[in-house]
Amino acid sequence: MPLWRADQPLVLASKSASRRALLEAAGIPIEVHLADIDERAVERAAGPAAAGGVAKLLAHAKAQAVSAKMPSRLVLGADQTLVFGGKRFDKPESLDAAREQLRALAGNTHELHTAIAFVRDGALLSEYARVARMTMRAFGDRFLDAYLDAAGPAVMASVGAYQVEGLGIHLFESFDADHSTILGLPLLPALEFLRAEGCVAN
Image 1: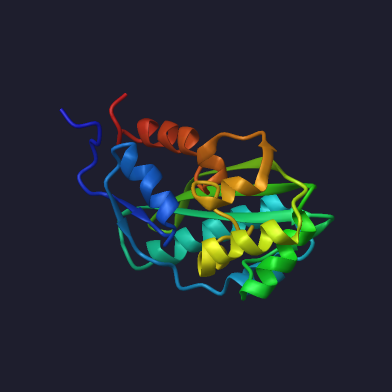
Image 2: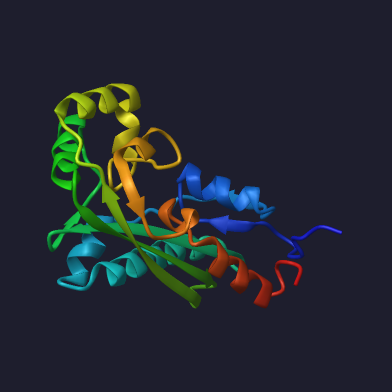
């Protein structure tokens, strides 16, 4: 008997390969549908809201945008925001921007806020946020250049210019959160909700 009990797959409102891999590894069938939202506009509307609040707003907005096009389907939205020195960091737009961002984070501890939201028919059913405190090694430019040469444009796909599931692990000294939170989808609370909804065997 399969673990997944719902009639249809879970809809994931995210193009993140890491989020998709986490769900699929847990036996959750998914359909990926990207949300057409202006993330920077959502952030501007949030104003001085805490990073965790912004991550929740973005996760909710993504799930709602997809839900509007998919009646009756259960949609999962997710987002991450990074804060260091009182400043929110966005995904770098170039390798040079990634280099400057990683120089700023090197040798320091930053916060990575991860949020998820479940929506059906436009209604928010559940949301959850968790923060990971990530400490980078005090590396120099020689290592940084080698890292960026090896990782290439992939660094522009994440808010921290790193992917700890790959080469980005070389950047870090320590972190205090579970792996799924760092990868952008706190899996245990997500599975708890899916069990409560009867989507996953309990």
